[in-house]
Amino acid sequence: MKSPPLFRKNLSIILHLLGWLLVFVVFFLLSPLSWRVVLPQEFWLRQLLTLSMVVAVFYFNVYFLVPKFLFMGKPWWFLLIVFLIGIGLWGLLQQYDQWVKLPELMHQAFRPGEPYVSKPRHVASDIYFFMLYSLSIGIGTSIAAVQRWQLEDLVRRQLEEQKVSSELSYLKAQINPHFFFNTLNNIYALTNFDVEKAKAALLKLSRMMRYVLYETEKDTTLLSSEVSFIKDYLDLMKMRVSEKVKLHIEIQDKFEEIAIAPMLLLPFIENAFKHGISGKHESYIKVNLKVEKGTLALEVQNRIAEKFQDNPESKHKGIGLANTIRRLSLIYGKKHSLNIDDQNETKEYRVHLMINLQ
Image 1: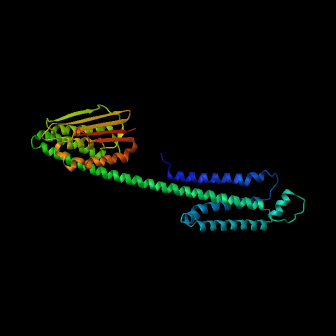
Image 2 (image 1 turned 45 degrees about the horizontal axis):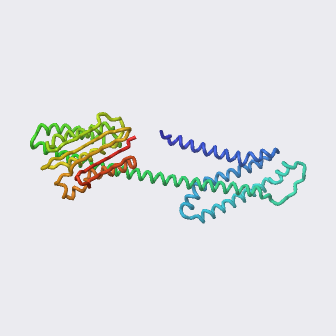
Image 3 (image 1 turned 120 degrees about the vertical axis):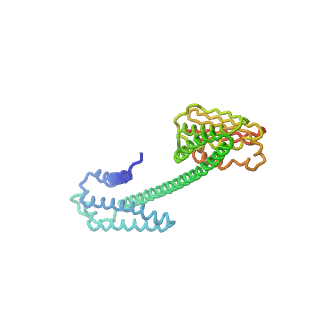
């Protein structure tokens, strides 16, 4: 379950606050407390001022400097501005020290009763400030870069998903009219010699249309529904083919309630009826469908009819089959294997498809 946007925003704010609290404790609090002296209030104000500068520089760098200069191909401007800001903040801290006379106050805290003698500025505090400043710039730049890469990757993946989704919708839109065009031709042929069979075929087709209208709008459907759809198609084909066509159908009786993309299996079977039936010679079509341990196996075999051997279309997989192959690649990728053999001595068209549905 995805977290609500408001929750994620509040969580981000809390994490930032905890992070800066940790920075304050580690870099600004622990070391001074270990000195075991009563430090003046002006020192703690300086610590808070330094922390405020580090925090301000961090967010200014993340949300302005990096996007406006570094990501816009202006690295030298970015480095110059970072350098100038560092010098400016360091100058402000020096002004603060002189204004509140912090060196004298620190001398009284560590050496009470001894007269204060002005000495050259202690550079250790300056080195410490520039170390914190550089750390803030470095971490902020890294975070901004990572966020940009993540955003670009998210946009790229969203575009790829949209492209795949659009392509799948387009392919399904092509497959469905292609299938019904062939099926209506089959029913039309039935009306010429057996009206009763044509009526029964129309009932079958109406049930199949209901499946196509409602199930193909979804990304997945139940395998049992897909198989029932195929059985209806085979029954429809049995009404049309003559006794010269031998059908060898082996379909597993029961299937797991497992999801599958709709209209993926039919085009292979439809292709066998389209290109494997001869009007002059005996023909045969074999269909074997089973599922074992979540892996679907479909085998379709037919003799290539003579009327298609010299026709360029016989070497073309057709719109429905070509689009189905493309859908398999888009949806299942490496989780499927498809072997189509149409170049053999027996002049058979053999399809062997396996899909891992788990």
